[in-house]
Length: 367
Image 1 (cartoon, rainbow, N blue to C red):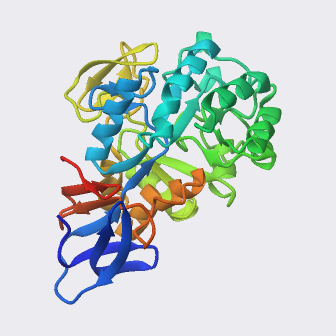
Image 2: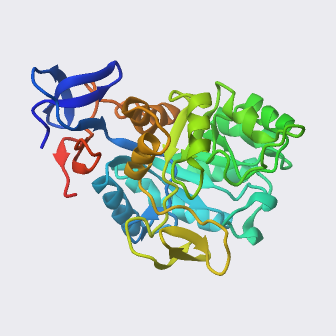
């Protein structure tokens, strides 16, 4: 299942050779003579995903979440965070408690709340009736309910109470991610200074750049304290915008995410995302009856291919942004790279970047 001699992408560069696996761990990366064929990449780490393969990660149903995790694993995402959409506090508490066992058993790497503490002006596909100002008491209940499962919260830093909430999240070891925001440059910088560590899908659902009123984008993309999510598909970002972001932010600060919803991997049709009905046409997901984008239908494998073929990045850079950098953001030390001692998570592609096989925790998956 592994090429005898492949291009193995490691933290130190591309090695012509193979990966030696013992049980669920990488024993070594061995150099070997011969003409390499195909690529061996670290298993992908997706920190922003709502579902896929017809299964939801946002609905609070454990079996559906297991189905979504299995689907994405079969496409190379061996580490997955469940992203919730904006909802009531009671629903988020219930969903967090339902996801907690899946985090404990390794099916999921954690939970991310993409709202409800976001801007109504930049809400995207989130239902406005449940949006509200950040509340540290609510956040404390959610974090306690997760018992270590809550990894990230998206917040608009201009909202009343946002700075205090970001400071609170930082104190509890949870990533505050700036997104769905109409913030000024100065308000964004204040959020970063308060402890925000990430940007939720940079460019999308945030105030556009203007040379006299720059807004959040330049504050986020140029700050070394921020890991910027990029949805690398031509629906969300022009390839030139992708290339600009990758060149400015650099692979060590940039995270490829899928932002996938249930329809990822399936045919066009009608689906559900949170409280919205979603229509998918030509692979583009929108809130039914509108042109508002409602997540994506890509996987991280698609994002890696687009990063290389549309945005002109190297395979090493794409692999880092899809694995090592997101693992670093969440403090996941056992995944994200192909090196001795790490969990044996690997994605094998042929020379045309077609999927050949996926290994998760030392076990080959059906692809």
